[in-house]
Image 1 (cartoon, rainbow, N blue to C red):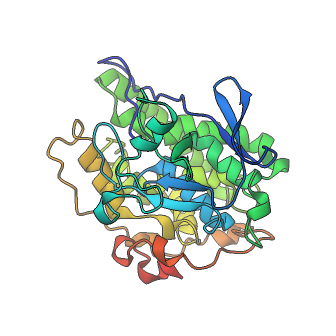
Image 2 (image 1 turned 180 degrees about the vertical axis):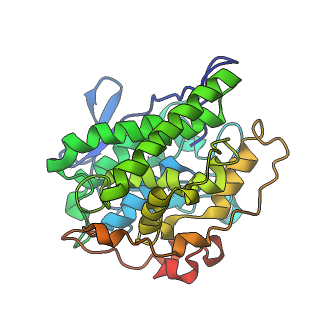
Length: 354
């Protein structure tokens, strides 16, 4: 998503956390969305009606791509991918022929936002779910999108889909995910977009306090909560997998590389080699986005050639801690041909398609 900057010239980075918070829910009446609460509407679950617009570069959007794949919703909710670079106003569909999304028929994601709210006044963000018949934005509330994919779309999950938001574990997951969001997911941005030394120093210490805590926390457990992958692991993965490639240098989170932290890097390798995680990760797009779009942080827009990420394919040894990726569920099938990350964009090579 475009990075929401703080309103003040100097001081700590503050993310704009207000979204179009409509929801697609199983018990909504068919047809037109209905009012549910002030400022939000309830849209019906209808296979084929909606398009998930995401950027492989963006960690917030990457969550939704992973969850959609793990749950087997590829034939139920279509996927539109925007370019890793964007202008001041919008993500664009430059990856598609003629720069136009083949399903929505639009050049800029802003068009779907403006169709919903004319002259949309805030940042145009991904992920976004768009109503295909009207080309209107439904929601860009990224934390809720993935939870709703797990719960409201359950009737359309693939056979053997994992339970990523298990009801019995939610009381444990919620505070953990909140800490991961504030301290890690958003913590790297707090470092990268700090506009004075004092703010940066505080953000740096706060981030590394959290990463050191995770290094200890994951030392004797394979996954964050329970004995299989959950939403919490998805949310942590999208930051960790970008750490050495962009956050370490570009965002000045450089006390050490993640590859120098034995537990966290083994945890990352374990997830990266699990279907749905590494096979949806596109490192050239990730690097191009951060180093090109953030021209205030990187004025030359030079995209580094490194680092060497082949270490992500080394055995993790995490299976010795017990548990399994899927629990009683099964792995997803091969990546659909039209959604494959190019083999030269990932250490997995053609294994990413299998």
